Image (cartoon, rainbow, N blue to C red; front, side, top):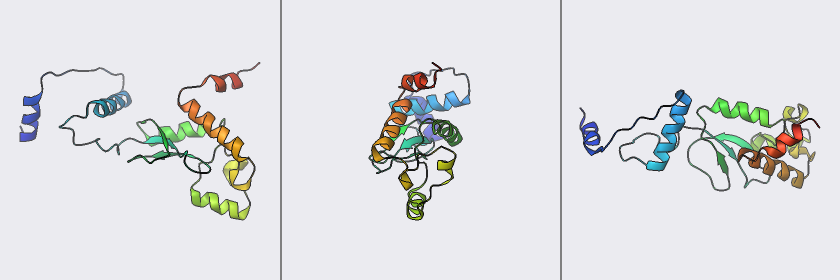
Length: 165
C-alpha cells in the first residue's frame, strides 16, 4: 500500500456505506460529504472546481444567470452543484420561458445596446430585452427576484400562474 493510503487506513475508526440509486446521486453525495466533513486525505474536489453551479450575478446592473465553476464571487448567488453543465443549460433554457432574463455576455449586451437592436433571444421570447429598453429596470429586477425565489424552492407562485383557471 502506498504510505499515504496506509496512513489513511490506520487513521480510520470505521467505514460506512451509503447506497444511492445512480452515479449522479453518488457524485452529489460525495460532494456534500466532502463539503461538510472536509476530510484530511481528500486531495481532489477541495477547491469546488469539479462541479458546475447555476449562478445569478445579482451585483450587476442587469443581472444574469450563467454556468460557473471554481471560486465564488461576491454579489453572485449560487445554486447547485449540478452533476453536469448541460443539466444547468437545459434547466435554464426552460426557465427562460417563464423568467426571460438576459443570459448574454456583458460584451454582447453592450454591442446590442449600441446597435439599438435586440438579439435573437429577445425575438424568441427568452429575453425581456433590457439592452434596448424593452423592459424597465424595476420590471427586470422583479423577473430576477422571481427567478431566484423559484430556484430557492418557492415554486408555488409560478405553478399558480401556469395552472388553468
